[in-house]
Image (cartoon, rainbow, N blue to C red; front, top):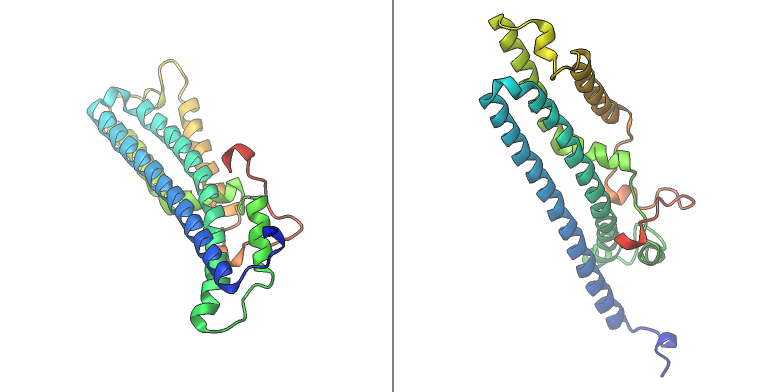
Length: 228
């Protein structure tokens, strides 16, 4: 018997789709756990940096700035993981909304016509649903905005405290080694202006049920074959 030419029964179709749903749910949950891991790394690293900075005032300036840029690396890593999580999340929501939803409502109509073909195409040719900048914005607004705000407050607090003590000049307060004060100030200013720009000018990530494939002609960036 030629299996490929034999039509599936209703029971076989539902069973296959249920297994697909469980597999996609598992992969989405795996990537979701990786997001939590990266966030935990950022929190632990920030707590360690703040502890070291306040216990060693002579190194606090450069330590806090280093902490800001370390968290940029964590943010970029978490944004990459979020893009992968979003791929599996979109498929899960597509199946839930167009298969399980009608079953529970006892209604044969689906909200997206041809959704099965869309899911099949995405399985064969997986694509990211959001851009790198959208992923960065999503994780920045969700978690990292508080981390960067805390480090900035600690950095400004350190400057204010030493200024009030009148033990150092303004130039010395902002210097790192023999570098002029303008360099560390510029590093902080550029970083936070970049973060603000990402929040203000990057399009918002819509819920997956609203942006599975918003433009069939441009379905998104291909996922690297080694990452599928």
